[in-house]
Length: 420
Image (cartoon, rainbow, N blue to C red; front, side, top):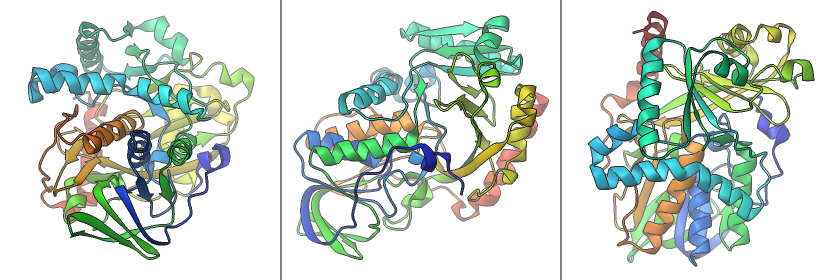
């Protein structure tokens, strides 16, 4: 894997493997954004926290994603309130809409160096059907006071440098960052306020023991009253059937070399991030190092070379022909967790256990927000959180997900091509 962020991110803080037997108020499994945000917020609230990550903090999609800090849930605000009622639905929309603010506030408060910029999110449409959907979303957001604006024609071209789109919504709440630097910064902030963060520490077993949870690793053990499972797309067999409640999809991203100034200023000159509206989305941004990062669906496997992503490179050149001679230096992927209903899932499958996963491609902002929510639930078990707590439901025929995903992607690509 040729991951650009490994070359550009801030150094990782020391996170040595767990050794020996320790006790804590909260044990967290998973060192992505959900787990790190939970550790930070719980430790700030006075809990003793031990976080265990099988690799290193930010190893998974939390440190490999497109770096977009996008507001909102996957579904439109009216649909959320229809599905969950006016009270909880309103709180869910408010939580998701304010999630980028939480990200940027944490960055400022803890001095996290991660190239953060709040230049807005563009949701763009190629076809009239998708433009109509964007207009509907915008109207719903505007009714709720969101700073959104509909753009057409020259206004879109001025921000993007391409005439590909017939309509777009600019949401000024969004922005971008270096996600691996952000994850490492969250780890450093959590350590600074007293959390213990251990990399290279895979949890092998979790069992209930004397009213607490005992977690065993190769080098030690943790006993804690509260257990947080924050493994998302890398969920394994630690908790029975949890991995069968989500579908892990592989995202794929390619990055160009540093663009010459003459080219850089013609590609996304507004420096907003953009994702396309459609069944199969493409997303991109120009980072602070003047590189173009473009992502979308790729092979259902790890990516090691730009040769694995010819469709993304060709699409980038279609958007901006000036890229014809620009070299592409990095390509990578990672597992995202998708849910069948397109909502994040929070579960409490046993006493003292809380799970959050399934951000459906919006993990930077939503995972950060859910970490704060989980910490609140731990510290005040009777306090409501702004996301439904549901029973775990396994996905039928889950063992066949790779074939199913490939078929679904092919169908959706054809649907987009035909304008269905």
